[in-house]
Length: 253
Image (cartoon, rainbow, N blue to C red; front, top):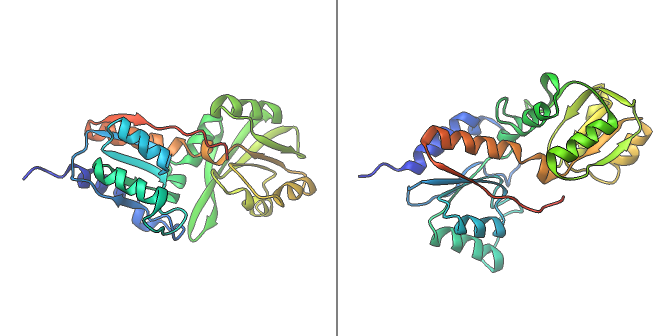
């Protein structure tokens, strides 16, 4: 019997990302969400398992789709409308889906937090901010002006970040939690942080930053979480000698 390449790759991903030992939100369902026949020649990375992503995966003849936000992110759905279409496309075209959320955010080598920190030239990077016995963020040293940091983010991510600059003009340290973690701003402040970068937040976080005289930067949920899924897909393709594809989105939130 021919070896099941998919399950071999999944086992490697599970171990590398330590999927079983890292807590997450109920709808994350980290790991293999959709199985295929076992054949894998092309692996693609994407942030979201959206209908557009799956359609592009079909066009690119992808066998395994590795995503950050999986199929069940919005909860269990009835097999109707777009959700039925997504499932049908995956099954008809023998495409497997593998998802990794918080394990991919916090990983020390391929995590969204650490890769964004390195891309912005932070030094002395430490994992911090405890949540359910794990560290969900990073902090590091930085010697840049606020405007230079905003410009660097624009060049790196291709978007203009939202900025609330009420702290020191020179940023000498920075806390980072990618994605939708803007509401962690209170925790950042209580831990002594005055400069915080995330992807998106809610309305109350802006006046909080103003009142606490913080530098608060929101650089897009999607854009800040492209790093990890692209890197782990690159490593998986190298490990198993597969072709890599990248599926992008125009998501600006």
